[in-house]
View 1 (cartoon, rainbow, N blue to C red):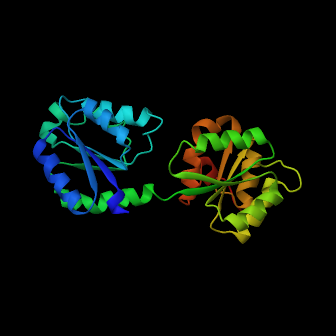
View 2: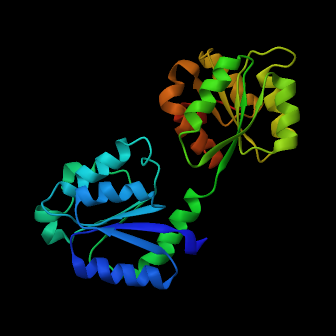
View 3: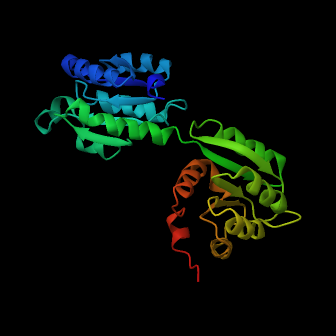
Length: 265
């Protein structure tokens, strides 16, 4: 995999870019570099597998590029390592305090840093990003399944491996497809989503259930938790929470926090 991995290094210090590039190329990575926000935006057309965002002067440029990346529908999921300036240089080219509070990165280090020490961390980020989350979409309405599929198709780390139209169908496909996450409606014909959840949890323990329903009462959340689900999202809130919920339950975390606190006794 390493010889196919492309890394974009963004930094305005030529010596740092050169040293970092040599180190990564010695490990068979393909490296491209940029020394400004505008150059980096142009280089993103090459679809790098990871971005290493170093220091840019004047202060605020690195943050502006960070914001652009995180708001871009194609690049927002690209793994990002931020390398901040030394403390005494923060005012001129580093991350200011209010910017740091908005930082969304997969890793963060400060200069001075030895490039070779970052290689294992970069490999780890790439490995994490290339692990695809296999999702089974379960809902008895075709338009909802298609809509969910369209949203998930925008994210590189998520793959819809199948669809099911009721609980029985979901149970059978979970056994056959072994998805990492099953998005489960509650009210469906033939077999309810709750009954399907119980069976899938028993027979496919590696499949995490994320309930996606129009019934968002606390009682339904408790029942879903008792059935063995890892997450619960009302359909009306699905747009902003769906991907986060999938990633959370896939990692073995209950979603949202309120669901984790729901009584399972």
